[in-house]
Image 1 (cartoon, rainbow, N blue to C red):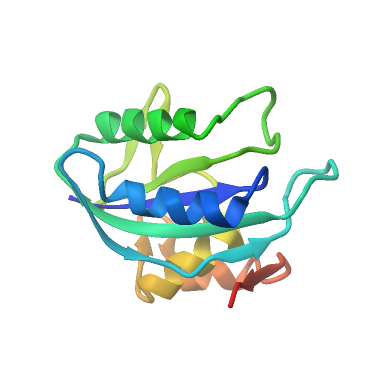
Image 2 (image 1 turned 90 degrees about the vertical axis):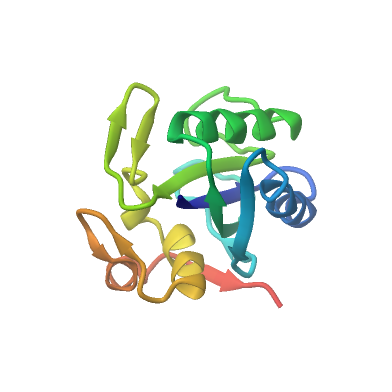
Length: 158
């Protein structure tokens, strides 16, 4: 199954963290990394002052079921020292399961498509970079959603 994972970091060496995590996605059991976006510097959406984020999106092919894939992503976050002191707190690594094929999943602890991905330029811009015609189930084309959040700062890193 093709799936998409959003990556973000704004603590420590975020560029190195996101690059390393992108590579490790392909090392997950029964998973192959198909494509990865450029890295993007983005402003945090939280009201509190915190460092900019480094974000990216990866396309993977996986034989893992959605819940097993999410568990693998959470384990990878933990290896990078992810803590969850509060919602929207700065983080060493954040991995979000954005899409899992065209499935619509609403289970405790797992919602796919990611419920806020259509509102986040830091997800949409890298997603559109690697799959220009990506469709978000229930929302339409990702690039159309991106036009509605164009005021959010997203800067591709050279």
